[in-house]
Image (cartoon, rainbow over all chains, first blue to last red; front, top):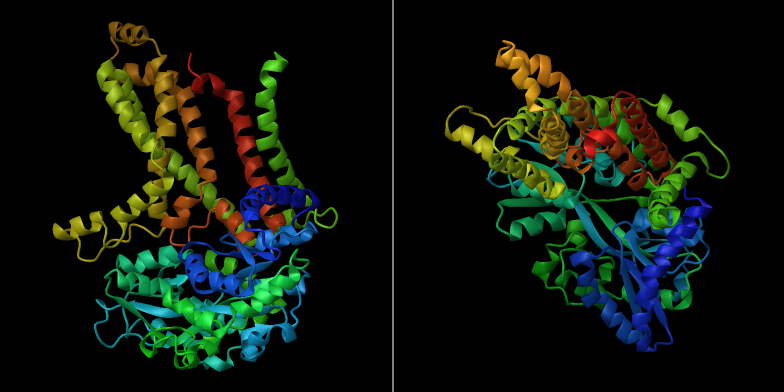
Length: 353
Length: 270
């Protein structure tokens, strides 16, 4: 937890950096504006083209952008100081829920967000709206497995039938789900997770895990260099490596479908505009434009009905209905519950044993 | 005098004393005074294991750096000036390369499809690639490489100050080269050994990127506990407490070593 003193430091620091940014933007002379925060890099560029610029134009507002790899500590600091600077954040859905419970995130009025109201119940929460989907999938080398490739987490666990070096993410989220599916739990029967059973199953594969990766870049490098023959990885990372010529691919079968969501900081300076933007951002047409720019799926499944995404492109995306049906939808509600937090804490002890 | 040093003092105050003070404060204060975080470090296994592993690896790295670094420093001191410049340049050049770059370079050398394994397989020395990285071995190799300059430079500085006359006197009294080395030169170089070892050991205690990239996730050093507490669990208090314990260990080491030798004299020439 951050202390009072911490808030003041954090606030001063953020204030200084954003102040400079704000000055540069005043020339736009927009009555309405918001500050939108995402994770930067190719991803934020893609959404700027597909969603942010068109939304700003349509609503006649100015969208100031900021980026941070991990928004959570900053959200805590800003809202704790009582004067948040950001309005809308694109962040892993779990943080929106946890933030909602801790009073850091605004409760949404869905009557003002008709685009989201039409989305499946599981894709939204009182505090958040799904914005884009990615998937933790089983990826493998086609050199090692030219045919009879592993196709399920049970295959990943089967070291006799599929000999080879393996990697998993050094993080319990999605990894526990994979372990349970390997142990025979159906993708739609995962929650609440049987944590004991999952860790027991993980103990089984632990001696055969060469690397526990910590960053997406690392997972891509492992597969690209042939350091491992199969691993859990994010679909976009695998397809990027494959595009560069590596003989690797992945299956959506038993993938774990994950999302980032949009949520609004409690006491956001431009609350009303932020909600207006939220509705616009999940508009099916804007959403359909996102996968044309990057390998992530739209948060709003209605995007697939717009005709913008060609069928062959749709087939590659994690949230395309047929692909989604093969996967487990992650329950962020469970992960942000006390049981979920306890499972996260247990991970460190598991790794060091 | 005070006017002259005050800008420097101000910088130190702003950049070091205040953040460290804030850090320490966070570790004991959260909605009131609490020693919960320290209690956890004492009671929970994973903290003990990480601290033990970190001290083990640091000790191993220090010994290896000494074994490898001493001959290098000795050679740089013994050869003619022009050659010693070359030797020192070879020591210092990697020192100027980013730690991240060097960690990835070791990955390229050591991994399964890396240069070393490919070469050994080409020579038919091995059938299956050796597991040289994503374990403690890879971590130690890369860490020794990265920290070697911190061993060689203080050793060289100390050796340079050993008068050559003493060695000549020893030889003129009938001492063999080996005898004069062990009885005269080596004892006089001990302050350098202690200074270099302290530097390497203390720096190694805080290593983060190298074990993160080359340890395969299993070599969990203390600094990784700090980052995981912040990133995974959002527990700034717990992270601060671990950091404070690490900082105190380092200060304690400096204090103890400082009682035996004057570190600033060895590190600060003349």
